[in-house]
Image (cartoon, rainbow, N blue to C red; front, side, top):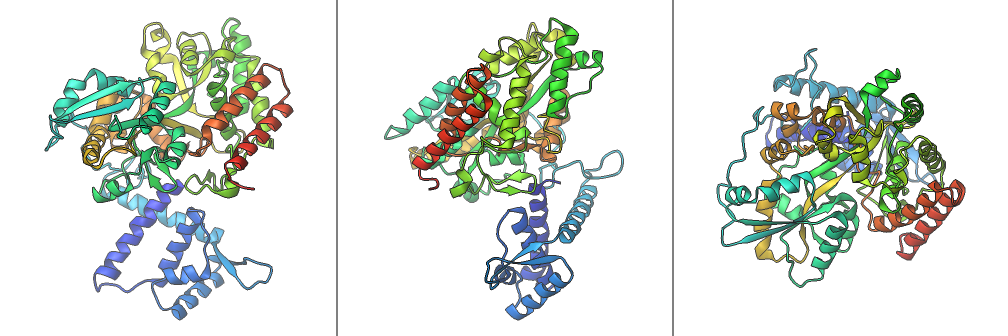
Amino acid sequence: MTRDELIRILDFADTSRQICSDRTNLAAPDARWNIISYSMRRHLEGKLLTITSAASASGVPYGTAMRRITELIDEELLHKRPRSNTGRSFSLHPTRKLIREFESYALQLKAHVGKTFGFVQNDGTASDFFFGGSYMTAKILSFPNAMRTGVGFDKKIKILCSPDPTFRTLKQNARTINELCGTQVEFTLLPLNELYAAILQNHELEQSEYDIVNFDLPWLGKFAHDEILRPLSDLIENERYNSSDFHTAAWKGGRYQNRQYGIPIQPTTELLFYRSDLLNEAGLTPPQTTEDVLLAARTLHKFRGTTPGIVMNYGRGLPVAHTFVQTLADFGQPIINLQQIDNEFDVDHIEGENFRPMIDTEAGHRTAEFLKALLDYAHPKSLKCSWDERIAIFAKGDAAMTYGWSVRAAAFGKEGAKDIHDKIGFTCHPSVEGKPMVSPIGGFCMGMPANLSDERRQSAWKVMEYLARPEMMKWYVQNGSHTSPRFSTSADPEVQSFSKMLGYLDTMERQGMTQNWPRPPVPEISGIFEILGNVIHQMLLKDITIKQALLTCQNSIDHLMRENGRYK
């Protein structure tokens, strides 16, 4: 079970108990459970747990709380550790014993809820669902129905977005969207760099030209920090918007410093694509580790003779920068010094030393060596490739493997790629031996410009909420978008029949394999990518050594962070 799912189970258990103890006379506060629950929550969120705060969370008088804490320490469920050299202050920590006990409880509770509501697998277990997802909707989602109260045909909702599949579907069906929303919706589609510039230019206006802007997830740090986007948290709370059906990673992708700025509409996950027929011919299994990737690239490169083992996203600038950052995550490390919580890293609380770059490290060197080694078996155009080019080369059958965003799998069904369509397999990003497999999440969220007037805000929210509904997500899939950020949409049999990939992405989410931390939402992300994009490209061209490249990147990013006052 993932950390986020365990937190959801804690919420469910705590709320169920509070109904009895706080809202009725059926039970009294359970100090022992309250302390355990609070302790586990602080542990899962990576926050400090003190004796005072644990006692306060107990719900009973201080003396009684201290006796319960002492009992838990004596039972080796909590560990008391000094916080200073004086030994006068202490922190509390759940022991391995308590963590095991709680995880066992959580699994049993999940199984019980699953069996109650019919989420049972063929073998009789009930673990194949994400706790809190909206699986109680109809199995087959209907075609989108019109808003009960339309926005108003006297209004025009202007939306700025990219030319990706979901937004192309919306623009091509603008008349239908107008009828469903009861208003006039206008879509402006711009390439990625132009979209970024347009959002910045729109911010300079006294009144926003656009009601909704779709932003790429790595931009969020800057857009939130510089108040280019308007926080949505108050709207979400006032409208009682239920976010539990969204994949956790997709929802977190629109969050900065614990405030929500975006609603997911087209998230995408980077995968490793491979030709299953070529792997079978060579006697290879789908890669699970970075060593497997290197072995497969080398073997297939030699085995096929004319077919390169892999095509890589090594183009100068943003392409190779993203490749380095995402591969660094395969070696278990983010680009900055994020706080680690179990096998994940905290992207909600980034401050001070968390901004320090982690490029010139052991993991950084192993990443660079891996990328350089792949170059020997890569398609000759790799050093000039960006996202579209590498997928096009792979789709034409001119390479045996490639990394790529899931949303671009639509290219595999196009003319020229149909011959190999059924021979393409995919897997989560292979990791270095001993590290969990993690794929970065990307794609787009819908946000509101900060300079959007209050009178336009409610109308924009109504359209945003509508475009992110489960039945709309299904409609996007049926029109060629390989993305589904909602559990209920992914569970629809018609969605599953469209692409086996969508079911796999849903499984990745449930298993915690889709993460935000490989590309953390920091305002300096564009500067980081600019530095890496130039220097790592020079390294791959063999103009500089790995040691020179990583030291240059480390020092340049460190200088950037110091200039911005992140640390001294």
